[in-house]
Image (cartoon, rainbow, N blue to C red; front, side):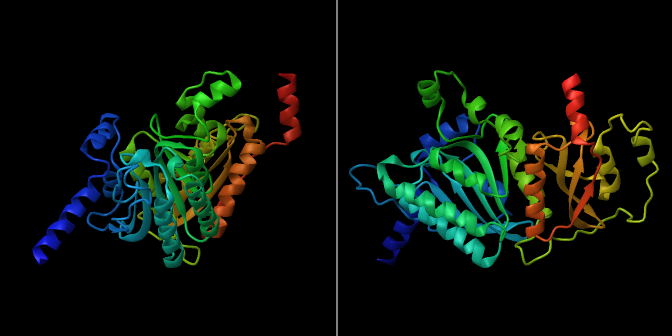
Length: 373
């Protein structure tokens, strides 16, 4: 009897870890994409992941749809560089990563635990959106997730990795998190697809043009960082976390620095031009004053007339905001104002000091020059 029970549990474990089956896994790999479990293993410290609600299945009648353990999302907690984090990852091999009632309950549960414990929350997105077979219950699940996004805002850091399609209801949640990282030519975020756009507006548009990483990192500003591949994406998340505290009641981690805080840099005077109307790259100034010339820029290709990002001084995490004379002479516009304001609010919430480098002309002069040009 005991052996039969153990054998059954072993079979359940194998089925749960198989996702949508080997055929679906092979399709995922053929697209150059990792599975949800492979992504979690890549992100977290080896052997640290503890999965929750592994054997949950959806409520639909078994005669309608085959039941899969996990219901299309993997949730749990683990460690990154020894720090506890909570994570959920949509599994595209199961019903296209669509969100159903039970999957949403799993995500909400892990979000609640992250808020209660006071640890960063990371979401890995690869989802076709709402599971239409479950109707309003699926949409209600999105409402619960959005509510937790707003509840957690300013309490714990929220990071989203877009590594695949993110359509319909699934796309609203990332925009409410603190940082969005998209994988180039893989991550896509849009409320409705190209087919609907063509039907309504009679315009042909590709998935990348509509909601790819380049579009969101340069035009909409939804994507804070762009990764070249999934491995690069996970490394960017790990580095970003080194600048952030666990929650709003803690200070960011201080790392030992071998950069002398009293050092002088004679090169600074060479960077600034003698003529105040000549542009220069403010990033050269930043790199020369921060620890080890290491600057982690946020929103690099969006509203480039303002530069924001993280660095360290004396081993302590700081935020940097600086006008960029190379773009629009460093003058502020709507996008750059929103970009810097959002960054300031984040740093204020999580006890990160801000260093501001100012070099901006009178906006009227810039407008006159543009008109005359």
